[in-house]
Image (tube, rainbow, N blue to C red; front, side, top):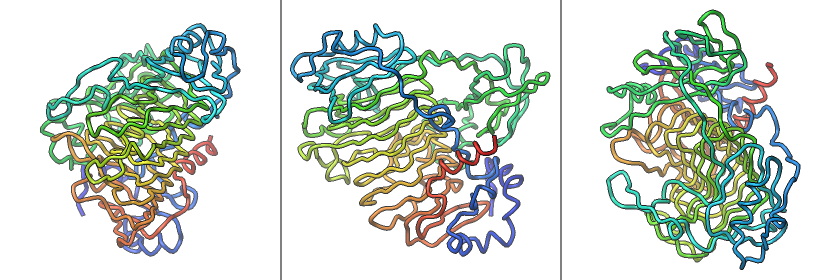
Length: 515
């Protein structure tokens, strides 16, 4: 068995406990015990530099605090909103948000006609309805009709400007990230400290991005694909980052509160960047989003019936939301946010055939794009999208405890790594590994992608050859495929669910218990 570049330190240092004879007995042991030796019963087999990433930092305040119940401080009715589905309530709702310094902006039961963007651009604001079926935002026209914009897909062909991002309701800010120290020595994946040129601008308790940047040879991309990137002839010059707290500073040695998920090689110009987001502690909750029942125009022809976007925000949330007839449900371009309790539906009149999908009604249900450590849980996708649960150049994100009509785990190439899909019912399970992305951007998935307790009405086989490197993890897959587990190679544990059911929740419990 061959060690690939990214796994070499992880395997040699973090997986010695089961490298020898245990490896060969593992298919029987895992099946009999109902657990995976990547984790064990209570995490005793897990190593911070092993092949199974730590997903416990995903979500609002890393799961260390519940989503708050923000006190109501304003009502859109006081700013002229009518809520009869006829009067245009856009300006009244925006005015209520703009005039509210903090707290919840209340939308009483009603149907609110929206004809332009609704922006939340400050911290501490919650846009709150009386329930997803009681307070409904109604969007009679798509964004492409209101603010036309032309874009091009990866081959240069024209496409809708709203095929990839943009939404009617957005929580948007600015990370205000800038380098404040340069990392001067290589730290390994799993390490919790880095050496910098000067710690003068750092202090204990500070939030920082650990950043690495791509070089001309695309060696970072090769590393994140464990040396098996595939065709990267059109690879984008994109780096990677990890959000961490500074725990202690000793000279120029900076201790972090979480393990690194990549190395800090000098070729990647590693830095510690200040992280001071302008928007935190804002949310959208208890609302419905309704779009017309027009037939879905097809891939790259979307009209901009896009519901929600989170962009460069942290510790924000969306909860208890229903989205109906959308081209795109969610776009998340943020860090450590939570989306909880979302139902996505569509009328039969929306259905069209898109590729192999006979009943497709939109482009993306959820996408984490240029995003880190977000949590999407308790979702129900009652229709089909070209891309149901998508990651693109994203890491540390978690999709958990959800279901759908015929879910696909879209990996949009361009180095999505160390993301988790756990406790998900894929429904028909006919296209679990359906993915997309531009030519020459690398394999669909990079290393560390983990699929844990994945079920469906049909057996789920492995992804197609070349879909990703051997350093992905498949555990508790409802499959007839024989187990294939190698400490230094592929990891497939089929046969049905294992304990814990939700790996993210188990990792979070273990981390919090150790505090």
